[in-house]
Length: 427
Ligand SMILES: [Zn+2]
Figure 1 (cartoon, rainbow, N blue to C red):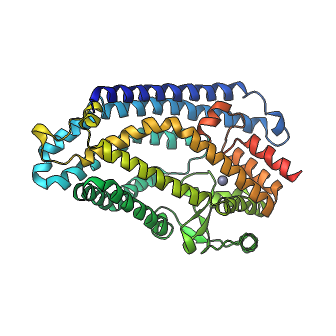
Figure 2: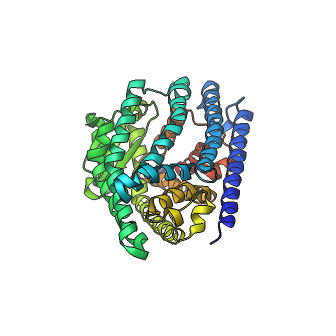
Figure 3: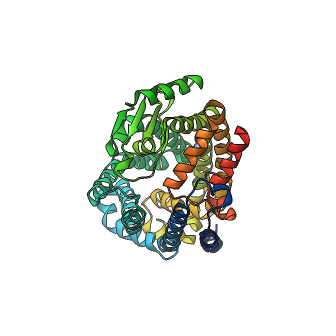
């Protein structure tokens, strides 16, 4: 496969993606700014002008930061690929690490080096977002000390889990021949299932405290709801989400009988028991409609297709040279190309998959409507509506998003659509 068509296709997708992202973001910002002056009629009785304008300002501030990070992210991808960043890192590690640590050491060093540089490049945006943007709107609860502790813990957990997995995948790529991608997929699926099992009890507690739900009244209500819905969980827990952020949430984790329900303390502080019950009923709706299982199956299916594609691409010299890297052939022969292929694929895939992301968003919004409908049947629709509105206001989410932006990005339908659907059901 010649390299020039690959370079042209990649550059066109990267540039096209950048233009579409900018077009969408500026549409959203213009739309929100244009509607900043007045609360939409449907919310006039329930949302104050001050809250509406705070949401508009938050959306605009996030939008401006988003433009900057989109432009920077595109430059970084270009830097790694066509401008030769990955090639430079690879050449250097081939000369320094490979002779001393061998092929596996060199390949792991390449993955680690790439990850470290990427994390460092992202850091300014994360710092600005946490300590400036979220701080300005009163959401941030993360102290600099906690930020550093999180960074260290993330690195440590990432290394403990990521390095053995990477070594296993690289070994499979080198040792199992032409169908390596099938074996690698098996390892990937097994690894993900294992993480789903151990995450709630082993990994999540490294970052947060989990305490059994103590409020007896709420507990009884929630248990009655779960019984009504035929749902078995190992326990109800409250998580100290307030350590990091004022944003509230509730979720399920775990697989099979190890499932647990986790409420953020910030959610319990904001909602009354009826509203908490309705939010939980919505989450149960996702389970009853098998949305979670569907999503897992879909992700596994897509990763199989992606790995098969990588299995083919990794054989094509044009895949490497077309994306700005000299593979380990000719003068570099002897070292494997597997880590290089993985990294190039990780860099290139999102450039193309961005264009199909509206399909995933569309499916997700459908699921939200289904879960809302389930919640209406099992709990109070009015409670769900008031909970949604409170969470919207507390998260300063805009009530007037741009419709095209919504189609592309929103995993949840806008509040106006969700509340209208709920009102229809309750009527
Ligand atoms: Zn949902």
